[in-house]
Length: 406
Ligand code: PLP
Image 1: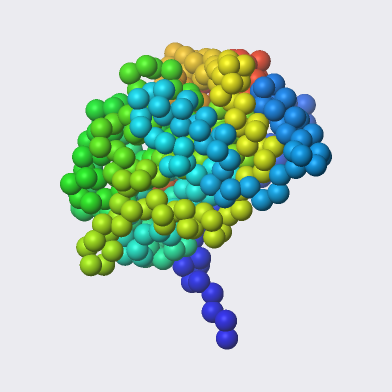
Image 2 (image 1 turned 90 degrees about the vertical axis):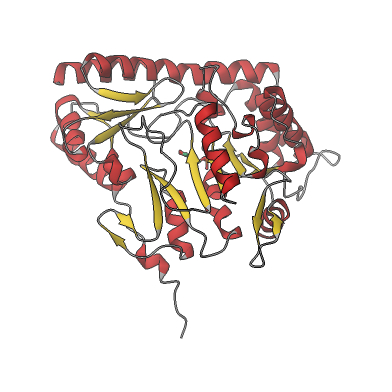
C-alpha cells in the first residue's frame, strides 16, 4: 500500500485568492456597470522592456540556425548572464560575488521553496509573520512542523513584523538555525537598513545559523542608504544565501528567470559538527533536478544589464513607484497608519477593522480590490495590502474612489 507524505495534510488550504475572486465576481454580478479596480495582485502589469524583447527575438532567430542553435545549456546558467549579474548586481555595489556563485533558475519561488531540502529535518526554522507563504508551506511539506493551531504551526519560530517593531522583526528569543528574511518585504513593503541587517548576520555567525535572504523586490530600492544585497554587510558571505528575480524589475513573471547566490564560504554542519560548504550541495541539487533556463530567456535577462535595458527597467520600476507614492499619499491623508510604497510596490495599511471587513468595505463602497492581511499570517490580521502594480490612471481613479468612500 502506497502511503502519502502526511505532512501535506497539515497544509492549510489557501483560500485567500479564491475567496477574493469569489467576492469580486459576486460584486460584479450585482453591479455590472461598475468597473472594479484591482490593487490586490502581486503580478506586474506592464510589458517587457524593449531591450529584453529585442534580445529575446534575436536569440529565438539564432536558435533557428545551424550555428546558433542551443540544446541543453549549463544547469547553472550561461556564463554571459552569470557574469553580467555578478558585475552589475554585486561587484558594482562592492559586494564580492563571483559568477560561479550564481545559479540561474526559473524563479525565486522555486528556489526559496527548494532550498530547505539541503538542511536537516530537525533544523530550527524562523519565518517572518506576515510572510510570502512559500517559505512556510515548503517547510510544512518537508515535515519540519507540527500541526496548525490558532493561525500558527507548531515547531516554527515566528518572527513577528508589527507596527511596534516597524515591520522589521527582532532576533528570536529561542535559538534557530535557518532564518528567512525578505526585504523589501512582501507583503508589508518595509525595508531593512544595513545596521539592522548586520544584527542578523552577526546572530547567524554566533549561532552557526544561515540566513535565506529574499531580495526579489531589490529594484524598488531608491533610498541610497539601504542595502540592495545582504552581501553589502560584512561577514554575510559565510552565513547568507540570497534570492533574486527578474520578475518584478523587468516584468519576467510570465517569462521566468531568477537566480540564487550561494557564496563559496557559506557553510552548514554535518552531524559530527564538521563544516560543510553549501555551494556544492546546491550545485548538486540544481544539476540533478533542474535542466536550465532556456537560451532566449537568458539572453532577454542579460539585456536588463545593457545601457538601454538599465534605463528601461529604471523607468518601468519608477512607474510602479509613482503609483506607490500616490497610494501612500492618499492613505496617509486619510489618516491611516501605513508602511511601504516607497522602495517597494506594496503598501501595508493598518486599521482597527478585521482585514476581511476592510476588504469588503473597499470593494462595496469603492469598487477597489485589495488583499486582506490575514491571508499572510496571524500578524496580518487588521491589515490590508495595496499593490502598485497597475496603470497610473487606474491607481488615480482607485484612490479617488477610496477618498470618496471613506
Ligand atoms: N519572493 C517574493 C517575496 C515574492 O513576492 C515573489 C512573487 O510574488 C517571489 C519570490 C516569486 O518570484 P518569481 O517570479 O521569481 O518566482
